Length: 229
Image 1: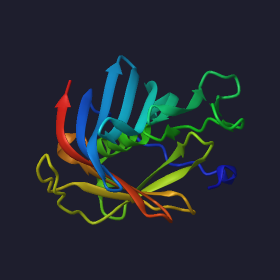
Image 2: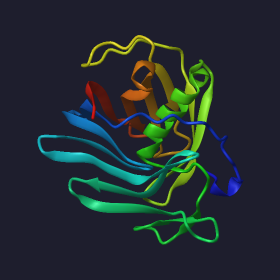
Image 3: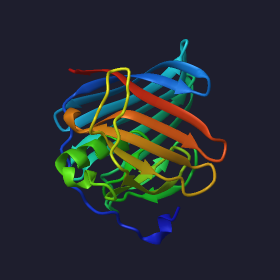
């Protein structure tokens, strides 16, 4: 962790995709179902949601709303819902005289508002935007870092490191030149994230694998269809 480390991730140019809906095959434990990543734009404002579940039971329901600024996606509110309840929210209060702060519906702590900070779903579009603006960052061994804040008051710099290229087999068909990045878990009960971005589709995430340590429980999204709106 280390919010106190004074770490300032690099600033990146971003080129964010047009409005789009990605439909996924969703898998968690033994359960299979449907997932969707929905990206909507209205001028300089955005709304983004990631959902996943099976048989009418929602396992993941995350929504991010905010604006697009010089650092890319700038969340203002993130809401996590599970099985229709457990409403946890993060508020990014950007207009304060003190440079802004981050507050939570659960924990009573407040955090400073770091430049370029993301929430638990906005990082997906931010990563796409960074790679689309600067494809050289897709070179093996390159990395992209950003502050990511979760609804339980957790905040740390996530660093995604580019792995050797591999073809990804998906319900939507194979992707040959996908950029594969991994963010390693840094402490117990943290999440290891593997994500595959398709350069031919604005570097949008065509496969995402979330693995929780030490339980090894995994959640996976694999692209079935993509529609620009």
